[in-house]
Image (cartoon, rainbow, N blue to C red; front, side):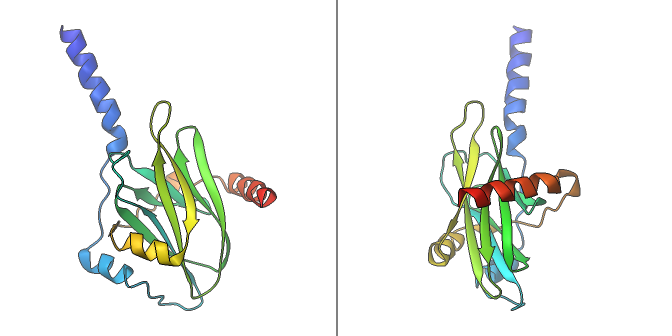
Length: 172
């Protein structure tokens, strides 16, 4: 009986390791980000968000921009990054590797990428796709800004990003 209880406790603990907390930014910072103003007209502004769907709500999935780890999104959250205009690979972790998209940005414009949780074999995966500015603004207004979570130790190898970039270009 004790072995079964221990196994159950360990299983539940393992299940919730993907449920680590994500710190939200201050309310004032979240409200400012939802104004969608661009402070530096020489930059593009990228919003990556995850809507408030119930499916996979306990999961937090990582986001990378050009291989640089920028954070982990939870249900009903978003992050915003100022980036150089041009081509960018946006990645999200999934069950069996990462999913990537390629977006082209222009200076002084907002761009929106939506992360969705999908069912997986062992754990939920995630997918990402670019959405219109109108749809993105509507969705982001219902979400909360997360604090920056940069961690160099989880950046993606630049060679892998260039390989993904080439593969994504070939698919276009």
